[in-house]
Length: 118
Image 1 (cartoon, helix red, strand yellow):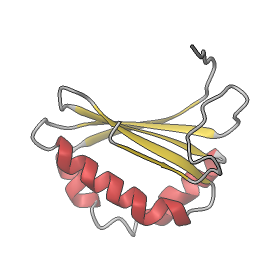
Image 2 (cartoon, helix red, strand yellow; image 1 turned 90 degrees about the vertical axis):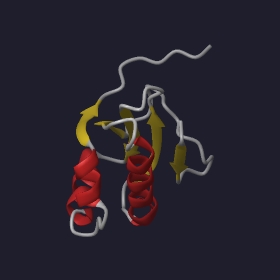
Image 3 (cartoon, helix red, strand yellow; image 1 turned 120 degrees about the horizontal axis):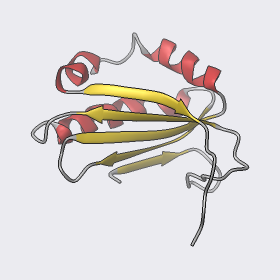
Image 4 (tube, one colour; image 1 turned 60 degrees about the horizontal axis):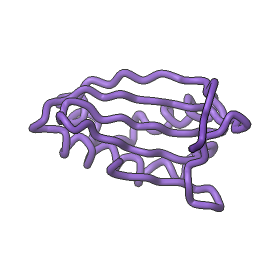
């Protein structure tokens, strides 16, 4: 993981079957030469916008060791909160053109079905 951001009282992303938050996972394909820049762009966008966005809970950004992918795992209060946030952020992301030039996003909503703790 290269970055974690959470607004909960504990300051830690909690993943549990009791958690009814909306899970949003964005797997972004890029090239090894642009992976670091991609992460700079998406993390800067998250820093600038997410904390002031209603319904935002947390975000975690991971990078693959081969340099070909980055993953953003984020939690929201509801799917509608995220849709509203994406709509509001669309015109504010000054890095969007550069991000799309070096990466291909593949994002989806997920439902947690099972966790296990060691």
